[in-house]
Structures are given as structure tokens and as C-alpha cells.
Amino acid sequence: MSINNHSISPTKVVRGNRAWNKSLDLITKLCQKPLIIGRSKSTKKIRTSFKKDLLLHGIQSVVSLELDHDCCELDIQNAYLISKQNNCDGIIAAGGGKVLDAGKLIADLLGIKCITVPLSASTCAGWTALSNIYTPDGKFIKDVTLKSCPNLLIFDHTIVRDAPPRTLASGIADAVAKWYESSLTSSTSQDGFVQQAVQMARVLRDQLFLNGYQAFQDPLSHSWEIVAEGCALTAGIIGGLGGAKCRTAAAHPIHNGLTQLAYTNKPLHGELVGFGLLVQLDIEEKNSNSQLPKQAKSQLIDFFSQLNLPISIESICLRNTTPNEINKACKFACNDNSDIHQLPFQINEKDLFESMQSFQSLPTSSKLGVNNT
Ligand SMILES: [Zn+2]
Image 1 (spheres, helix red, strand yellow):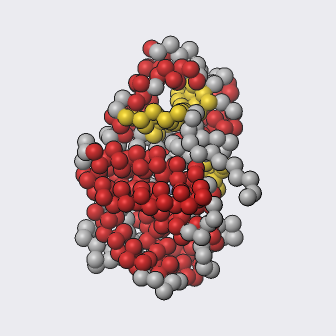
Image 2: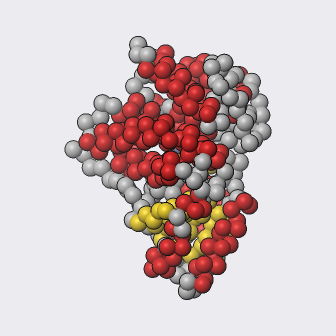
């Protein structure tokens, strides 16, 4: 067997109600001069209270920085310099996926401690040793593999429960994609780790199907705990255990392609991945004799509709839906280095374009209109 190098999990994971307050001792053991980074105005209050808690808990100094864009080189460079100038010995990234990705990358570049505090369950970025890099206006460029997972992940239910339901729905779409992507690219793998990771993705999908709607409706339910942790934590273990081989098929490359376009209302990561997953199943349907992709597609269209997730080109809020524009996304998704070529069959821009066009408007089978606000 060839050598495989895994970053499976953060060194320590603290989860549950008031997990932040219960982690203060651990944080002081990891660093004394952290840089707290975040981005959205709506969560700034949380970071301000974190700063207060840390200073009251005997941390020497806390520098805070609000990023201007997505996880992009401009923001990374700026945070890197501020961290150096202030001799910071740790990064506390408190926000959504892009903030977590930026924090992990800065800590990795500086070789300092990394603490992730997801403020929603929208992705598993708080867990993984991977950062996605975007342009300042949100176009996907590449992903970077980091030396390790974060030193500490704090998943505070009291805080995450207050995040907009839209972020949970987005996390569900991203996490459910793990099964459909990994089973497609890795079902014939002889590697025990990969086989186990794929099965974990199946169990996670089943839990999301069973509990997703209730979790979306009621953040105080037990279903919410299973679903939020499934999206923000378990999805990360699957990537860590299975490694690059069982990570993506077409849903994520299609997401990467779609980020190249302009939007009237910017979709979240998982919203585009979910749409990419429907397109992936459509391509699978055309490339196999099995009825399974067709059934999975219709099951997911109903499930996503219940969660108000976009299921058509109309509902992802593109500024311009001309064939030329859609083709730009297909071209990017099918570039030579794209993971889309890991599919067990050949795929080109034209096939992808045709599949994507078949999702032009909301299918008549969908129960709900999509409200993307
Ligand atoms: Zn994802």
C-alpha cells in the first residue's frame, strides 16, 4: 500500500451548550495573544463578547480583525501582517465557512495555533485541514491542503442555534452531497479507510433525511443537534478519513464553476453545491442504465424544496442567465485540473451545459417556491 498522509480531526473538539465558555481554559493553554477574525456585521457582537471573555480570563492581549471579502489573498495577507506585527500566537476564527478557511490558512502560514468557532452549521470548514481560496468577489480559485486540522474546534450550540435557518439548510445540502459524491468516485476503492468514510457518508445522509426538516423548523429540537453536528462536524470526519480520493465528484466542481458568475443575491456554498448535486445526478442518469440516479434526483428535489434550497437556475439568483453565461460556469467546472474528471465516465462542457439547462425553471413536482432570502 502506498503512503497516505491524513489529517483526520482537530486535536480537541468541544461541543454542546455554552461550549465557548467551557473552552476558555483550553484557549488560554493554547495561546496568550490571539487574533480573532470574523466578517459579517451580524456576528460582530459575538466576537466582541468573545474578546471580553478572553481578557477577563487572563489572556494577555486580543487583537481583532474583520475581513473585507471572502477567503481571498488580499484578506489573508492583511491578517498575516497584523498577526505578525502584534506577535500573535494563535488565530481564533469565529464565523462562517470562509472566515474559518481564512483563519486556518493564516495560522498554517504563520505556524501558530488555530482555534475554529463556527457560528453556523453551514459547512464543515471548522473541522478540516483544507482552505478554499476565492477572489475578493467570491470566485473560486483553488483549495489548499493545510499541515493539520485545527488545534481546537468549539461548536457552541447556544450560539449556532441562533444562526439563520438558511445557513443550516445550506449545511445540509453540502453534507448530503458527501454520500452522492464519495459513493460515485470511490465505490470501487480497495482502501478500508475510504470504504468506511463512504459508509459514514451514507449514514449521515440517512440522518439528514430523517431529521433535516424538523431541524430546519425547530432549532430547539433533538433533530437540530443531530443535523447541525452532522453538517459541521461529521462531514469533516468523512473528508479527513477518506482523504482527497472520496471528496468530490461533480457537485463541488459545478459549485466552483458557478461561483465564477455574478449574482443578484449571493448564494451560500451549500446552496450551490446542492444545485450542483442535482445536475450531477442528471448527468449520472444519462450515463448509466440504473434508475437510482433518477430516483435520487427526485427525492432530493422534494427534500431541498422543503428546506427552501434552490433547485433551478431561476432560483440561484444569477444576474444573467444567458447560455453564454451558463457556459462560463461549465467551462470552469470542466477545466483540465477539475475533480469532475474523477467521475467514472467522461464528461465535457457540452454535456454539463445540457444537464444544467434542464434545470432552467422550477420543476412542476416541487412543492414550494424558493425564497432565497
Ligand atoms: Zn462543500
